Image 1 (cartoon, rainbow over the protein chains, first blue to last red):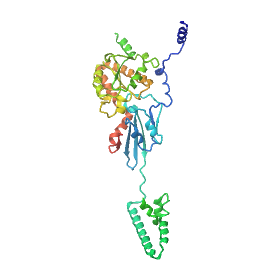
Image 2 (tube, helix red, strand yellow):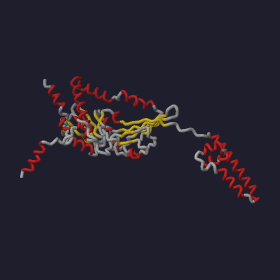
Image 3 (cartoon, rainbow over the protein chains, first blue to last red):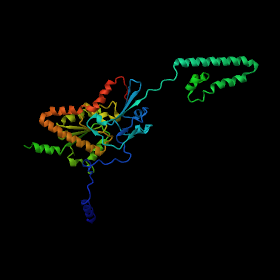
Image 4 (cartoon, chains in turn orange, red):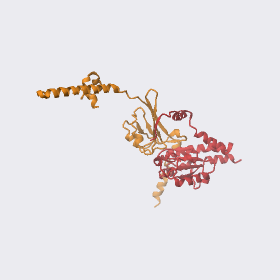
Length: 199
Length: 186
């Protein structure tokens, strides 16, 4: 009757201990898909701000510092003592700049030990291709041309020539409409200025 | 005469006292699992004691709720010096998802000096063991300092530990300098 228990006792005598040897050895690896310390790659970030928007414990701080040459230095700081490790920021990051690593050893004595941060420079946006004065002049020219066409049509209508005026006006707007870069087209051809007016 | 013997013995038995300051129980479960046979922190002498008067290391979990604040302060005052305070999980340091709540009066730094913080929500038992080992080494240093210079030496040590590093102080000094910086604290 006692024999099976004796067998178990005997095997336990020669078995390895169940205790992890962790502080004396390396820490064991975390399970797959474990959500540990955040890794942030500032080179992929596009500063959309979605991560800080979805962060429930508000662990993400974004600092935008204007530089003298018009660029701005953007720093994202992830506070690991504030993080819930829900992974929502990594899920929402369209550029996959945020990743959850399997590093769970988040132990430290100073607040700086718990910050994950990255900085990148956002270039100054390109200046507009036309000054407001130029745009106003182009608009005035377009208006003048339209008026002229209208007058011509009105003058020609009694003669029954309205059909001729209609294609003429459509011809003027046609080159600008499908153009991918209307601004450049407008610069070369003043007759396609109505495209600018639409914008 | 017995001082060396006492010091050696104290080093091998840092006793823990655990304060739950409104925790969700996640960190508490993980702390108890540290004492189970698998992680077995008792082989390093960590023993969960029932009273703060016998404790060397105080482990605080949870954001400090209004209800637990006074009990926390009273309990911390009962722990004999030199003591070591460990914050367990994200909550005591920041409030975690409860940040900004009317029922929270954190962080823990407001009430005491925090020696070791263990991040994670919740931390893995291995991380807790590592944090406790660090706390034990800090406790030993504090005990040595107290032997030499009394409680003032311990306070001085704590103040020095709170100072930011030389390399990181540059980045913290940047923050006030860039006052024009548009800071989005969300």
